[in-house]
Image (cartoon, rainbow, N blue to C red):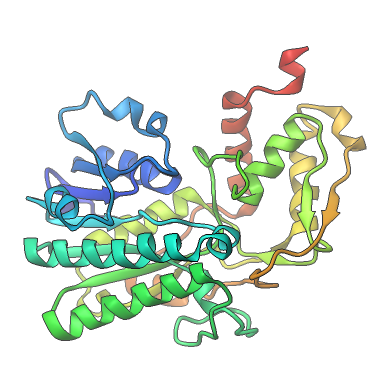
Length: 335
């Protein structure tokens, strides 16, 4: 991958104190970029960027993408924008649809407009596999979506429509990356809306039963964070004109059920705690708005961006487990 276009270039990452944003910032800094982070810290964690704060080529702005003037300030002087800021989680969007809309739609439009006015040359944004909605076909192909099943999914689909409108009417270039169930270091295992992999790992590290929503048959295309970072760097630097103004699935291209996921995690963690053999998952009700199965076709990203994911689920889990064992306080450590 040629990262030379990023060297010494001012790059804005919105939502940069979050899980994906902070991992991306680390990679951008390693590539020699000058990085500015915009985040209101509502769901992110400043500890995720603590190691960057003293660097000369890093700047942090605490602010909200729902305020256009803040967006203009953040994007000033930037050549590249990576828009990761959003209010995630399907269940949260069902409880707070107005807040989800204001952050994910108004905030997105503010960033698009601020970036267009500033003359940003590349705007890459986090889209979502939730836009496939009730389309049951597998694997998921970018051109074939269904009806969204949650307010969150609606907001992410609207983002794609706005990006297309900005290309058609203003000639503003964007690339959207539809993430599929990203996991890895710095992903928060706590809270009502935490993702399943960090929640499951945290539970097992404490010899607690992971709670599965439904009967465990629902499946996902779990995607390790380094694969997602690779896709973002490729999208920011691609020189292929055919790759611009497109939407891409960003995943590994394999699906795993929730029950299979728990069993795989137990198998890996048994190396550290043999007592886990006695721990069994608990099953609860299905969550409203959940899609039963998700599997991505990544052919388009491979062909146009050169995307080539390095980590399958097992390899990613091994790295994630190492990080959580080092960073989470466990029951055994308390004894």
